[in-house]
Image (cartoon, rainbow, N blue to C red; front, side, top):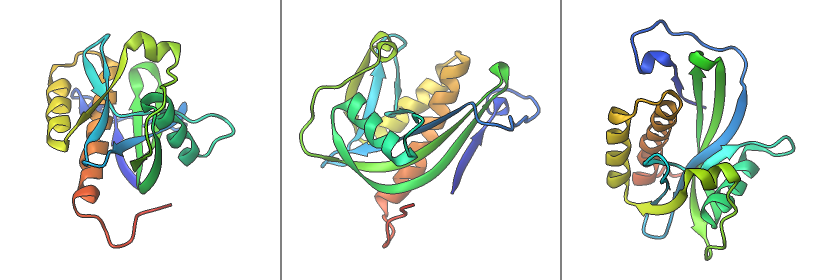
Length: 179
């Protein structure tokens, strides 16, 4: 299932160019707590928020990568409720294409310690819980203010995931949209 293709044309008036082969595969998405709040990772180094997720390792499935990334970045185990689809990011400036498999999941149990990478520690990752409207407001404001090329893609990607995921969360289908 396809969610969205992001290109340089989303940010400036240029011709759409698609990069044919993925440079990176990732898994990310919405993690909900019992109050239907969304896990957002605040990056204190640049003042932006993102959804949890990251790269798929060689021996992993997309689902396994998502579960691992959630645990590493938030400290929570989770259960995947819905598969949302794939977001493609075609970053022509640096000839980089990322495919992100996107999910909605719910927290299971109590949090453990996070295990952030050195890069994530440098970015100052901090877990924050927000309601949907708060998360969308922060993402929209950030998209308007951001001037960083790579972060702009991240913000638009995560905003897309939030909006598509909320359609399902707020009115769940009778049958979960699993794999």
